[in-house]
Image 1 (cartoon, rainbow, N blue to C red):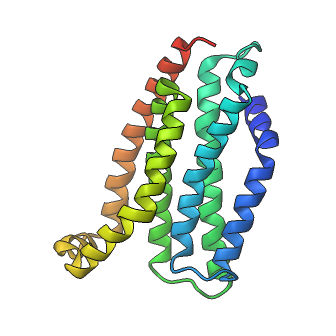
Image 2: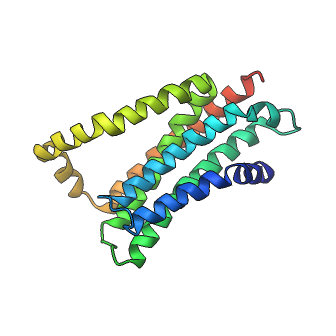
Image 3: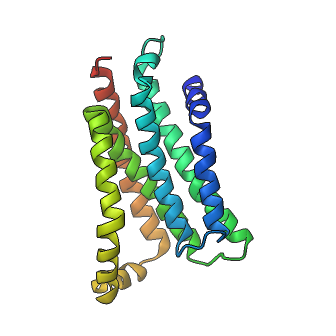
Length: 207
């Protein structure tokens, strides 16, 4: 699996550098934005879509499966690579915000939930990707863009107007340890099921 991870790192190093530069620019407020951590989370998601598109265009699956590699290792490497890159983007943003004095007591909690969000995204993305292929990537990218640009701002403003219908206050009354504990347990179950399903789907694919 180490060689597969190294291959992905070499192939996508330019994209990683570009996205890292974006995280740095927004975290340091060179390009002002309301929530740099949210942007780092979005960049982590778009990175996965970008690399999947590159792999389909370059027939990366065909090349990789022409080599004597175990398909379960391929799937495990995909999960590990994208989780590491996503967590790296988020961690870099948090580190830079702390260095520049923008640290807040709630930032650590936001970091934990952002990492859990990346795990959830990867857990949903890869089974669908291995099942539907490039068609899913194209449709999902358009859907995600529409959601981020058109739907999310409307829903966020509506929720803020109604004080999040009391849900935010209810969540904030719970201890951080309980919230993170429950989130971690549920996320771990979803992640394990996702990995098993992805491995099964990938082993059945014909290249």
